[in-house]
Length: 250
Ligand SMILES: [Zn+2]
Image (cartoon, rainbow, N blue to C red):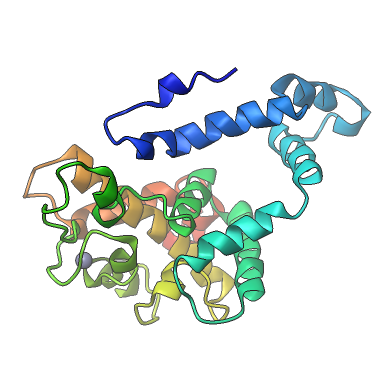
């Protein structure tokens, strides 16, 4: 049984609902429903595993059959937070399509950061204000170098300090010639080509990592978003097909 005491921390309810806590509870819940690590291992060794199925594919199959379409409703509820125009079912379908593209092109870390974006999982000041006892009056400014926005996903998704890198010609930038838009940053614009989704996804990862870096890891004012962001984008695409597309390398 999960000891809820291990999930306590200085941010109160935020710790209890952090990604780690959600993963821990999900593992416990799935185990209670008969989907355990040992069951997955048994399936892998049995005829259904065929000796070639991966641990992840077996786990996804078991969970999908157990949960049914509930994840679609949950995704729709999470997307409602962003007030995107358009049909809800079409947006959810687009999310599934994007994850399929990411599966083919990008490392899991990129899909993980993308899920955090969709599900409002960044530790941004706007989101954390309610959880910090003394944080209400603290400045809430963009961490990535512009003075026009606040520390929030809504702002970073259109922040001029980061879109400059995306739109700049290659090799200095990523050469994506689209105007800043939240729908594009969320990879949900149906007009975005598959190749631009592959460019936008490591960019999304890079912005997430850069914001975290400035929030938690440095007070060095000599480090700029312009030098740091390209490194995180490259890290996002490392050892994947996406890297070949972004940087024309083999
Ligand atoms: Zn900004």
